[in-house]
Image 1 (spheres, rainbow, N blue to C red):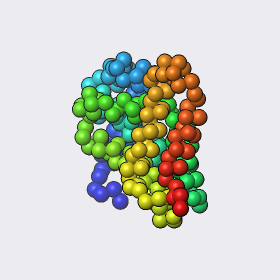
Image 2 (tube, rainbow, N blue to C red; image 1 turned 90 degrees about the vertical axis):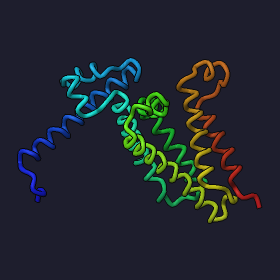
Image 3 (cartoon, helix red, strand yellow; image 1 turned 120 degrees about the horizontal axis):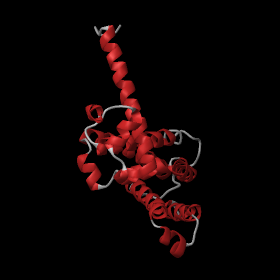
Length: 217
């Protein structure tokens, strides 16, 4: 069954899907190589062998493309987080696994990670389609919900004291991202002030969080 679609319309849909995929691939390569500011729609069009006007049939602006790439990265992260919740571990072990998973994602996908950070800037978000931004934010919320659910599980088991799980998830998320952003953006802070490897400071931040969460009596 093809819902009344003709072979011609089905072929056209397939061609459009392939063209969109080709545009995203070219955009990913250009953004990963040059960053957002230095990249142009013209360069993306040349890379995928299409006219500039054709790009605009699929994406209304450079910000639209950029946030679409961010959505890819968030989807990859969500997939990794989805593997954590069902693991037969205590909540403190699960939170440690979350940190390890997030850091491994950062190490493996640093260019996606940089796009995810820059896409949060107001000048990028202002021009990106609202629907696309909401989808990205929903994916990020799903990732944070994984953390929140782990904290809630720890409270119910008696391992953690009573806290607001969603607030804790936001605090942990912001802490980890802040540490990573410092390493990504500020070499003076990283080399001249902090003088610690990122793995060490992330372990210390996890220890502080777990010590604050664990029930003491």
